[in-house]
Length: 286
Image (cartoon, rainbow, N blue to C red; front, side, top):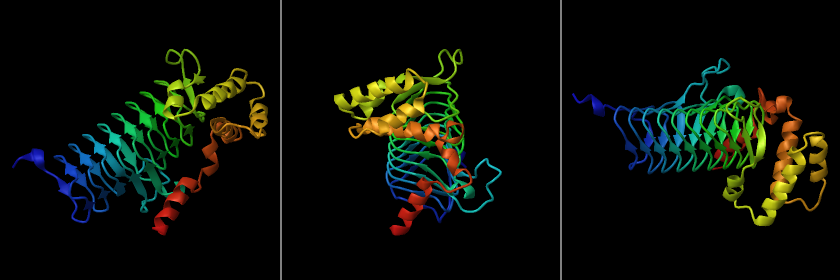
């Protein structure tokens, strides 16, 4: 017997005819895998896991297994992965927990490099990049276009803002605002902090030059002098001519400044977050 081609695929699994499945893969009975997706060697797809179209899932990934969370009591919960994601070798992603909304979701066009871990009840939006060995604890949201460099650990209930960048080996214990560079110089020679605007993020967000200039001016006002930041945020939000990217930055800062421990999502501890409500309400409408 050629052991290199053994596969364990449940008859009940819903797998599109053109899905490519490598040797030694295990696919459970509640798995759904969409057209054009390919699985490398030794990939496990367990639990109530739905994978969309045209994803590349490399060797050794384990998707949809039970959370490493003692609050999970074994009820049916979900992992949902969208389309066109590139998931590198040995990535792990867990289903949600009952108390966290019962859903972990990865959107579209994301890159998860080798050894990334996406824990229970996390939400990764679209076009995000996570470098090798990025570790997301539970209940985190990574917004569209965010870049997280290698070996970053992110505290639970944290938000990584859209089109921001987190430097390599930076511990993240509170929210990262959108459009900024957040890093620790020289790997811990200085505390993690906002270091400047993430200029490539402005390009990726397709901001016009006037929008980008207004965002840079707002950034300098908010971050170059930390005193009275919440007052300065409120002053900006009271303006009628606020550019949309500036409004996004200010609203994110306000949510974090008023959140417990600087983490807006702490308000959903023990509750179903809006992302899960929106997803399941949308599923019922279909």
